[in-house]
Figure 1 (cartoon, rainbow, N blue to C red):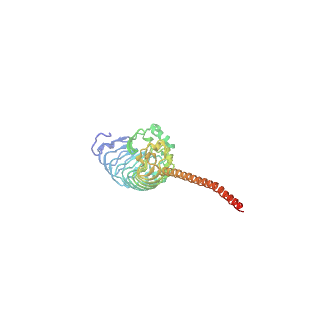
Figure 2: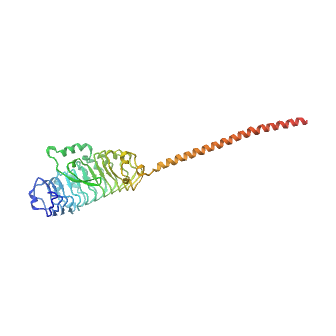
Figure 3: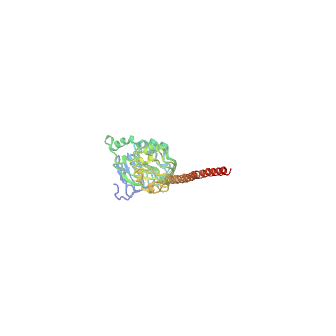
Length: 376
């Protein structure tokens, strides 16, 4: 019943459905979500409507999508019953007006694979409890007001590593003939796209447009199956991780609008799948590493830095110093040649002078002696 033009409060006959997929997304349904009286749904999708108010007790087994509504409530008031949905695999609450901190009981959803909280009013630090969701493949908490540092424990998200990709693919195919029927909107390369059949093959990490500070944890480079990493629009400082090439499946990397400094590591040019790179408006300096992967990027991805190289049509200072040094050496060699040339001329003149004067002096001496003998 998705996108059917329904414009009404949630109809009462909704409660007659149980243990099934229920999709009423992309309609004009408005009002508050009442408490559900049935046993639960395998999948419940009420996204892209005009729902308001708090979140009621919603028994969902697999996927709950309430994104793109007008839900405005403190997360503290989210019913604790939701934390009992231990088999929940997808939780989509993005583009609402939810406030408060990310609840620590999130760790009680151990099978969660997709968590989308983007574009809400979440505040506070990112709880370490998120790191306990080892099966998480998509984490999107962008465009909120989260503060503090990025936890160093995110290397525990093992589903974002190549070692678990085989298991993810097997899950998608359906263990015990229970194939997943989820679909979701995921932002990659700055664009929001809907994924369904390949959803379980995605792996993204988005903490952009926040107030996060500190350095980029090296532990993020352990997530070698990550396809998209977006940390843009924060206050991150320090240098880019030297082992960034460990994320071998990385296709999109956005670290723009931070306070990152230092050189771009040459290892970045080793990412053969990288097709989208944005490093603009940082404090990076030095030469952009030479490599086919980086040289094929748009030059606008590097503006607002102190970078140089062929891609920017800007010669590096090191090159100019080398050229100047070479010119200086040539001038020095030229001066040396002139010095030795003049010295040679001087020495030649001196030798010639001696060769002419000495014989004359000796001849004069002989003449004097001859005259003396003649007079005597």
